[in-house]
Amino acid sequence: MNIDVQSVTKNFGSFKALNDVSLKIQSGELLALLGPSGSGKTTLLRIIAGLEWPDSGAVRFDGQDALSLSVKERDVGFVFQHYALFRHMNVFDNIAFGLRVRPRRERKPESFIKNKVEQLLELVQIGSLADRYPSQLSGGQRQRVALARALAIEPRVLLLDEPFGALDAKVRKDLRRWLRNLHNELHVTSILVTHDQEEALEVSDRVVVMGNGKIEQVGSPSEVYDNPASAFVHDFIGESVALPIKVDGSLVRIGGRNIGLDTQGVAQGDARLFVRPHDIEIGQLGDNALEGEVLAVRRFGPTHRVDVSVPIDGGKATIEAAVPAGHEPKIGERVGLIPERYRVFAA
Amino acid sequence: MSSLPIAGTRAAPKTVIPGFGITFGLTLAWLGLIVLIPLAGLFLKTFELTFEQFIGIVTSARVLNALKISFGIALAAAAINLVFGFFVVWALTRYEFPGRRLFDAIVDIPFALPTAVAGIALTTLYAPNGWIGSLLEPLGIKVAYTPLGILIALVFIGLPFVVRTVQPVLIDLESELEEAASSLGANRWQVIIKVVIPTLLPSLLTGFALAFARAVGEYGSVIFIAGNLPNISEIAPLLIIIRLEEFRYADATAIAVVMLLASFVLLFAINGLQRWSESRSAAF
Image (cartoon, rainbow over all chains, first blue to last red; front, side, top):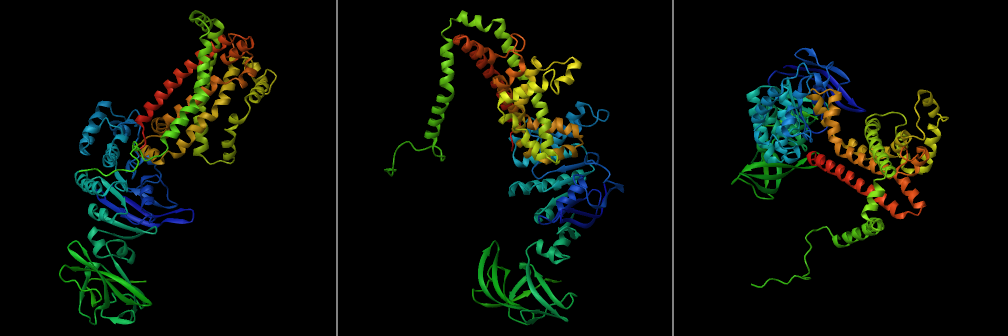
C-alpha cells in the first residue's frame, strides 16, 4: 500500500513534535525512520497508525483519506518496543486475538484461525511455544510473538516502533536480519522506527533521517551515509569530526590559516567542516593539510586511532583519525591531517 | 593444604539482606500476640461445650439464618462493589473532570466515618419517612429494617476497598496494551472485556476479598438499619453480642468459630483464585 503523508504538523503543548512533514512511502518497501529521541519519528509512526492525530495535514492510504479512519479500521499491524503482549493469554491466544475480535459476520471459523496461527508460529519460528504465557518467554521470543500477532490480521502496513530497542545487542542483530528476510518473503509495506543507525542502515530499503520534528534527508542507506544532505545528518549518521571554519571567497580558513580545501559552494561566512575519521589521512605538513600535534595513539581493532590536537578559531579541537597499523605517528609529533573526503555546511 | 581461617565461623548468612532473625522473630511474636492468642482463646472457650452441644448451637435455625444473612449479603455486597467500584475507578483514572480530586477523596469516607454514624445516616435516609425511603415507599420497596438495608450498609462500607486496590493497578496499566488491542481490530468494548479486565483481575479479586471480609465482620452500621428481626435481618455478629449479653459465652464463641472457619475457607479460595490469575498474568 502506498502511504502519502502531506505536510503533517503536530504539537504537544509548546513542543513541536512534527513540523510540516511530508513523506511518500512506496508499496512493499521497508522504510526506516531514523533519528535521535525527540525527533518526532515515533509521533509520525503513531499518526500513520491512527494512535495519534495531527494538528494539520493529511495522511492518505492508496489515495484514500486515512485520518477519517480509527486505528481499528486502518488495518495496520503495530509492533511496540515493549511488546504489549496480553499477559493473561498464552502465545496462541495472543496471535489469534486479532482474528477473534472481528465482527461475527466477518469472523473466520475457529479451525481456520487455528491453521492461520500455526502458520504464523512457524513463520516466526516459535512453533513449540504456543502454550506458553508471555512471562515465560525471553525478550526476543516475545517480540516474535508480537510480530506474529500483528501479521495475523494481514495488515496493509506493518509499523514497528523501536521493535528491538529493549533487547540485548546479540539478539537485536539476529532479529533484525531475520526481520529483513521476513520482509523479503512477505513484501508487506513496513515502517521501522529506530534511533539505532546501524539497524536502520542494515535493514531498510530507504532511510528517512529526522531531527527536531523535520525530515532532514530521505535516501537509500548508502546515499544517507555517503552524501549526507545536512550537517545534522552527517553528525548523526556514522562517526564525524566537525570543525568550525570560515569561508572567505573560495578559501577555507581554519584557526586563521588558509587550507587548500573546496568550499563546496558554501557562501561567505562561518561554516563547519565534517570529516569521517577513516577519511582523514595523516601525512606531511603542507598547504592542504591541517596541522596538529599527536596527543594519543590507541589500538582499535585493525587500525590505530590517533588523537590530534588542531588549533581552531578561539581554541583547540581534538580530531580523531584512523591510521592503518604500522603507520601510526608518535605522541608529541607534529603531523599534517589531510581530509580525503569531507563536507562543508554553512553554520 | 590448609584453608585460611575465616573470622567468625558461625553459620554464614545465605542471603545478603540482613535482619532475617529479628524480623522473623518479631513477625511471629506480633502475629501470636495480636492474632493467634485471641483466636486460640476463642477455640479454647468453645471447647467447654460438648460436640453435641456445639452442633446443636450452630445448627439452630436462628444461628443458621444469621450466618446465611451475614455471608450471603456480604458476598452480594462485595459483588456489587466489584462492579461499581470498577466503574468508579475507571472514571477517576481515565477522565479529567472538574472535582475529580474531590470525588477521589470522597471515596475514602467510609474508611474514616465511625460505622455507627454511617448506620444512623443511612437509616435516616432510607427510613419510610426519609429522603430516599419516602421515594421508594410508593413503589413498595422497603429498605430500612430489611435485608436490603443490610446490603446497602455493607455496600457503603466496602466500596473504598475495591477502589483503592484497583486504582493503582489501572493507573499503571500500559496504554500500549489497549492500543495494541485496538490496532488488531478490537472495539472499545472488546478492549475492556478481553484485555483490561483480565489484566486487572488479580487486583479486582483482592478488592473483592477485602470488601467481603470487611462486610462479614461489619456490625456498627448494620445494626441501625437492619431492624434486627431474628431469622430475617439479624446478622451473626449481632447474635454473638446478644449471646454475650446473656452470659452464654460458649454459645457466642461457637458462632464466632463457625464464622471464623467459613471466612477462612472463603478467603483462602479467593486467594487461590487470585494466585492462579496472577501466575498467568505475571508482569514481565
